[in-house]
Image (cartoon, rainbow, N blue to C red; front, side, top):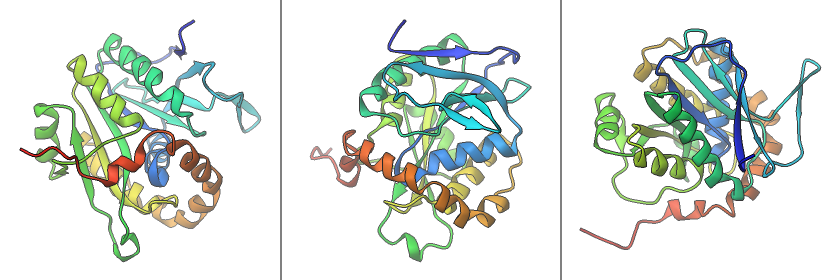
Length: 250
């Protein structure tokens, strides 16, 4: 078996779906967003990720044993969401990106959208966090701008979504990241709400983020441990580079 393997359950016929990635990262924006989408869109289990690089952990929900890194899909086969309930070790990021992109190519994924946070020091002063975007090519950038997303033109991207953008570009799969302004070190449901609102506009689906905002305090408390684990993991994935501008100029 390869280092990372995606096990599909079947039951849903994919039809050129959009793949939405929401793995642990800064502010846990991706995790909060993806979990909310799974709940609100009534997505069904589609598969999980198996790997010896993952810690020996399983998750229990309603007495059901589940893998921590899972895929969900809508019954129409137009949306697939990748989410995780544990922080991923830095050694897993690259092989996971290879496996996800290989899966995306084989399943003729139409577009990949990564949901993440963009840490800002003045987050407390922001009533509604803005959403920025990064595209893996000209078409992806134009798609972001079409929906009024301010595209980041200079800087570094790091972590899993950086690998995902790089690998999708190699196979000419349109991919982009939506980055909500967030707290650098705390779970941020408000940033997730901004990201989900923009995503729903881009995909033409209706998702009411009011329940997410109403449960903000509960979410912050329940995800405190995952945030700590994610911070420890990010320290080994060069995330600090995102705070700097590249030395090259044009």
